Length: 407
Image (cartoon, rainbow, N blue to C red):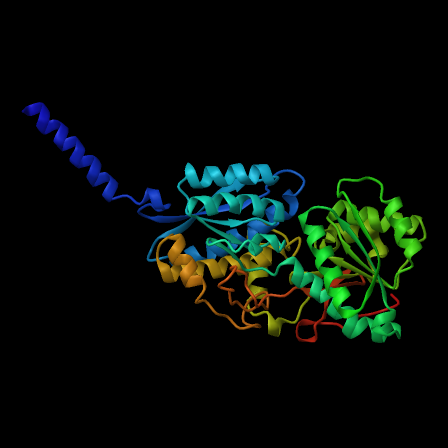
């Protein structure tokens, strides 16, 4: 009898312990856990770390303001240098750390792989920086994305050619010749393919499309093909090292084009300008919001810059930290309304969330498409390297300078 009572007492205590803990839902008595999946080592680490910093700043700011009902947000980091690691780390976060919501991830390949894992396990995957349309095109139940996808980048390329370049070059739209050079991962391929579709629909001639590996150390054949095509405009999609190589070898091989438009990645970074010097001057670049931008359209930008410098001792290395900061603030706003890390409730609340353009630090609005979870009110902007600075030049409501030609 005594042994029976002892076993009963143990069973009761175990049941009591289980009822008093929410570990299975990623919660403890004093914190709510969110997974943060980024490439923190490897070739993508520079902008992966920069992206994570934006998330970290948003969480620190949120916790200082009281968190969720007195509970702080705890970020559980996952390092994903590539897609395989992204899948493995998402598995670890969900199935070993009991995480129910993950934010990430800078890289489209990592995002695609990791969100497969979260979807299978009923966890929420909230993308803050990767651009491939395929991340949301699958219309998964548990995927949301705050930043604009690649097709929005492609649209800005074609709209800028249509609305500005034709007039500046004195040509009709049907006479403009466009070449595309892109690295061949999901990121570059998606922007290139969407740009071709949009160009076809507008009657713009694509004279050549050149794909290449971002790890190559020789782009001479690509550049010679571009040179032979004699385009008016080059649309380029590059990471840092290939952006530098493309600029240097174009100069060596005597290839010049009236209008060059980069698309995020390498052409945004100060490291690119430092490496190629005055070869960057005059280049356009479409990307997430950067820091020389109309402050009236980006409230909170200066406060973000102040926080960043205080914590990390320098200015941001790119707009990726700002983009992730803004996106994470939306995550935290939604979490505040729900009060717990519950994927179904978070998704339901996110679909109700609304913000108008010009009311956030990126200038983006927020309204998620209920079909695929994509924010429909975020757009990349056009920047230009002018006198060693990357200035926002289009559209007019966010610009600080007019686009300059013949630089």
